[in-house]
Image (tube, rainbow, N blue to C red; front, side, top):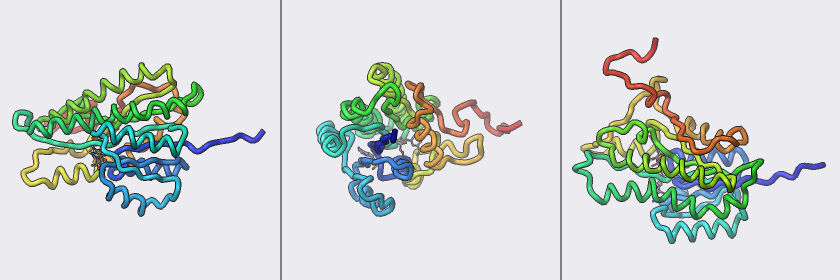
Length: 264
Ligand SMILES: NC(=O)c1ccc[n+]([C@@H]2O[C@H](COP(=O)([O-])OP(=O)(O)OC[C@H]3O[C@@H](n4cnc5c(N)ncnc54)[C@H](O)[C@@H]3O)[C@@H](O)[C@H]2O)c1
């Protein structure tokens, strides 16, 4: 008998830059159809030109802070695809500064994008994720967490809180959606070399301090993170749900006292 295979479908938020962009690149290389969502329509145009994947890459401007916009974008996706196998929530922002100096607007924006935005997108994607899910091949939600949720830094308290809140959503969603055969996990990077970090470092009077090189001796590339996301989309991870997987070269594993050697 000839096995009939279908093209897997993914939705990636924050698709136009950094980790989301690398995720789109990898999924397209792996033969997926990808709906790429981002608040920046112009940046989406750039990935279209770069990735040149024709019909398999669909670009949809979407602001994950806006519930109506999210709902209408997912109903547009539903018209083009009857199911979604995977949702990757990479849309995120970084705002830094001592907590007592931080503007209320910055604090609210962190939660609006990093926490509420990921929840809104999962809620909107749910009917399509359910359509694709089976006990043999569950559907997947992968959130972009951060080691900030495990090991917060001074100057990054509100960002850390937005990711810590996301970590609780991941755990509860995983259990609530288990009966639907939908797996919910997060990857939690340390510093990754992306435009988010470059622009935080370039800000005059910057308050962002990167974690720096990990115990493995380097800063992560987006591909390091996407490799773990890819594992979470494959049958090898069919029994993994509700996890928060550090992808940080050991940065959050143990405190390194100043001047101490990390090896040996
Ligand atoms: N780069 C790092 O060091 C690092 C570390 C830990 C976690 N993360 C997380 O990984 C994710 C991706 O980060 P990145 O480094 O690739 O950042 P990035 O800035 O390179 O990309 C983020 C993308 O999200 C989009 N975005 C922002 N607000 C949005 C909104 N309201 N609606 C839709 N899209 C929106 C941006 O336009 C951008 O294209 C984020 O959630 C971030 O918090 C990054």
